[in-house]
Image (tube, rainbow, N blue to C red):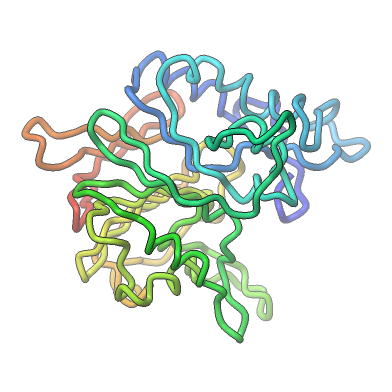
Length: 312
């Protein structure tokens, strides 16, 4: 179920292609590392009577739902490579937090029944000589009330980071991202900006993440976005097109749009299910990020450098 009250047919592999796509990644891409940017549990609500799409589906924060949504469809890919898994807003304590604590939380268990914590401390993982910092932004509000953002807890997390040169930041909610949102007053769609809480948390560093972070990887927005910024801060990739129902397509030109104290220098967006493979260039001076559809066909490639990402 999505937040608009719609019930998606999670058993239809055309509408919910996570399993065939996971198999394609494992068999064709043969990755050395898999990064999941959060949101694992979707079957939160009971299927309405008479709805044939989700009829008989399990629901709730329990093993049957977790197995149906994640562990069964991802089985082949889980065996193919190590994973980095960040926590999504579907796994906050009020939603799927207990399952997350018991099944995916990387911190040591404190007892036979691990408790859900509201916010995990940032931590670093090193794989193949590259450092990845994982930030728990699962509960960071996308918008802020008129009284301002409660950004202090996230500012403290940024302050605690000690990235070496070339570090990638992995966090569910994008620090900088765009949506095609419906205005609550007019009902018309307009360009929206995410995430105001994380942007406010970076205010004391002039809007930039800690020095040493070369790239930000996120999900949350159900689209694919690659964003570069005029002030040369780390590029942002939004990789929220893994299988759940896609958000409304971005129709405006993002170049020149103000966001987070700077403007967008270059942007590419896609409104398709798929996955992204990052590979080092032959010279090792940049990364090539290629977007593939669910069948494994390449559609778009970006040259990713510490200060920009250019796509064609």
